[in-house]
Length: 262
Ligand SMILES: Cc1cc2nc3c(=O)[nH]c(=O)nc-3n(C[C@H](O)[C@H](O)[C@H](O)COP(=O)(O)OP(=O)(O)OC[C@H]3O[C@@H](n4cnc5c(N)ncnc54)[C@H](O)[C@@H]3O)c2cc1C
Image 1 (cartoon, rainbow, N blue to C red):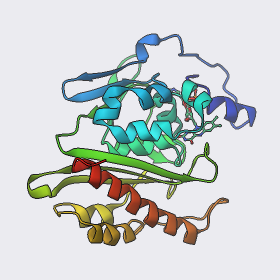
Image 2 (cartoon, rainbow, N blue to C red):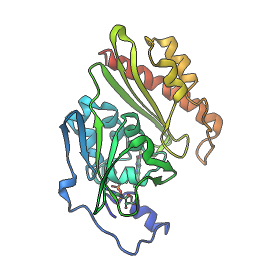
Image 3 (tube, helix red, strand yellow):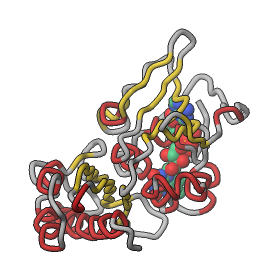
Image 4 (cartoon, protein in one colour):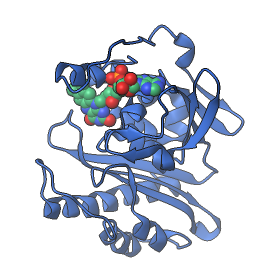
């Protein structure tokens, strides 16, 4: 299936995929939309990265997704690439899968016979491998609209300005009475085979009034329990440093926004 072609064409050129037939879904314009309905933001699978980055609903209610989309590659790639293609491709260093897991998104799949709702947390199974069945396509992504006093941030470190992430961090949080953190999601890209929760960081922050000292402490725990495999771009030691530093920066921004700053 061909959506934006930004990943598929590359892997076909590299002879890593050689499909017998290719169905171009770009003509199904009904699959390109962003709308608010029944407490969720519904995003059609053919929505381009550039539309996500510029859309007012996404910017206001789900700013980390707009930020993630805006950090993908360059304008040319953002004009063509689609959210459905990015999620189906499931590159562990890609930006939208990480952002969707942090936003607790659901993925609506469709086959001739049935429609399924799959939690994004269970959708990504391994490197470039998803829960999608052979006869299914991604139809829609649904993001629950966060309660008031919620906000997020997305940051990424890459070698070049239009590169995939060495490490990226998505933070989404909600504050409750007395400024306590009611809910928090900290999700990392580039540290494993799928988007990965920094669970020790989340545990330390949930239920607390978050201050700078706590953010520093929690960031040091971001890679706890994770195996940071070295790759051709970064050693384990460098990745650990990047994860901690970037988690701290992203948390500070998200907290400041949730309190009404920035
Ligand atoms: C130079 C370059 C730099 C890039 N940098 C980044 C980056 O920094 N961050 C980042 O996140 N991404 C990056 N990308 C990838 C880009 O975001 C792609 O657009 C995205 O991964 C795939 O989306 P697509 O619409 O182009 O899908 P395609 O390439 O058309 O398809 C990819 C795969 O998904 C399947 N597919 C497509 N749509 C659906 C659907 N609705 N349901 C089921 N399966 C479907 C296809 O069959 C194929 O297997 C980069 C790409 C390029 C070329």
